[in-house]
Length: 419
Ligand code: EPZ
Image 1 (cartoon, rainbow, N blue to C red):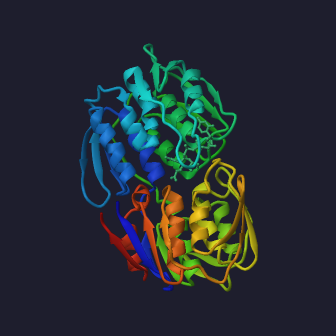
Image 2: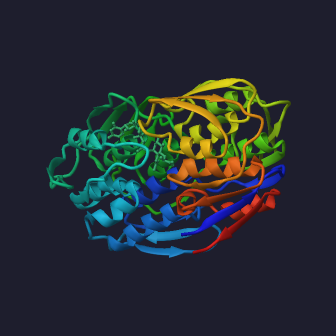
Image 3: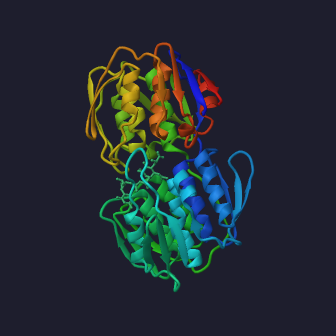
């Protein structure tokens, strides 16, 4: 397993190209199963989760051609497979997103129930609620979920008890394949939902209201070939903005968009990072000493749970005490003991962490446990005194494209040791 050796103390400065968002590419790739014709995508991030999804699409019968520079072309005309097995779903739980398009396209699907992961139990009940509301029959036998809609899906009113990004994707894709109109109430408002809505609309459905709590979908009468560009990764952009803030540098995140940051923008500015637009994206630079800020993770446009670990790394060096509450996932503090090994003063109590800023962190051997926790350890390594070795870097490679190259090009001293 690869590890990263980071020597801290250098400002993170320069320009970095934000890749396409993993969490937009995955649902769009799944939705490609609905479209019989050619799908051409650009700005697809070169991350291992996308590779896993492409492997699954090929297993199901899709013809996938990958070009360089984030471009790929695929056709699902020959798709006949309707099963996503345990080993695929275990490797990447977002494989679950193929369920709705398979039911919409083939009238049936079998999929392994995704287990939990290090950040929480990750239930899928809301996905199944949406499919059932649109007329699918659902049976569960041990770890396998069977969904059948031999007569097709019918538009209906789906009301979620709580916003869920994945379940909103599932509901939109099922609705796009359904007859008539579907109303999705209490939908997730993340920018990635709007990206999928744009894809489905270009492919032949009509999706209105994405980005609000209420989405209206008219099922596609017919599907047409689609060309779509994946939106930039807001979490990657914000992660590099934090890198500049922590190290006292100045970074231009090319492709970064203020409107995608939601409450994160205000929290970063309150922490002492000045953010302003450039003609290629956003510029972030340290603006005085780092200040402690309390944050609570919430659905978009609230503070994103996917940025919680990275923000905590920055709070470890801020003046004062910050209270970080994780409200989306029940176990998303795996980075805390690792940051403590680097000298951070963090007290965790359930879903709340109290961070007291320290003068400096020191390098240590640390273990990556999940995608975003891994990034928080890399960020801490950029400012820690001495050398930090981050083990199990495959977690990072799931969602951060060319992390070594991008960090190195902005001044970091980082080396990947393969093995
Ligand atoms: C998506 O996960 C993202 N993954 C996550 O990013 C992100 O953290 C999360 O949204 C929240 O923004 C992808 O898009 C591939 P949810 P998802 O459904 O869809 C509960 C990363 O690091 N829930 O919005 O699984 C759930 O337990 C990953 O890139 C149900 O109860 O998240 C959680 O408490 C991690 N039943 C809350 O909803 C369900 O059927 C929000 O989860 C589904 C979810």
